[in-house]
Image (cartoon, rainbow, N blue to C red):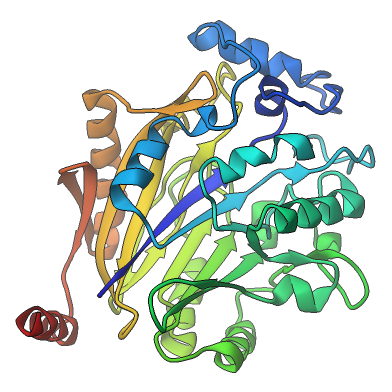
Length: 382
């Protein structure tokens, strides 16, 4: 029996979205482009029409809630790229995302199980903002990985109980290639994130040892990695090698990559899933000009079905959505077709193909003989 996981890219609930929710932070922000977060709300309205505020907490998820009800995934895992805090100790880095703790219930409105936090925005409002984020998520009953009050907590996986006898272990890492500041790394006695030193074999060995310390039979292991630039389809050779080595040595089932503002290539390596970049899932970018050719307004829900006995990917469904007026809606047939062609073009380099499916898109790949034989055996035993 497979466990179906929901994965997505960056969930950015700060700035304009926070201002549209019932209990926003003070709107002042520290950007050269905009001095008030309300400006992003106005840009979105100018681009796509009026937004009736305050929004209810479920509003932003829109059509995604219908898909959750249909699929009923065993776990819902997001990259939360927003600090949950009222802290005013902002990092002078040009863009700072935060949402009010009183608005964080929008995460429970979608029954999110785990927020990975190793990214380049969770410390936008300093260590105080990170500690507030950890406290709020704990109070809401949402597991976290990738950040903590010290190094031990930052590197510890989230452990999600799912099927009988099976668990999902979520390890979260950030790379400096995503723009994550080096000084954000957690240390003994100092809050921060789980920052990768590099993509070397020594780093792979260290991760593999950590996984082996906690892994049990039937565990599904996810390595969630914030890496690479915001725009562009290129997959660096060192990132690809690192992903392969994590599968070879640490026997990771899913590489959950994010940082790019648009979806990137998919690979199935030794029957295990690599998502090189999941794209943005929720943001306040409507009305901002630039990079239109990448269609950052199109989002994807990744529903990956994993066999806990083997760790193999048995199916991958991709549900296209679009961000409009701070809400996820179903895109047009033309936009879905554009996304299918783009993802198929990028993924075909790695032996995966993206086709139109019953509920959007579906991935196809050449299955190894051992995996195909195991699947036939399971079907015959039903």
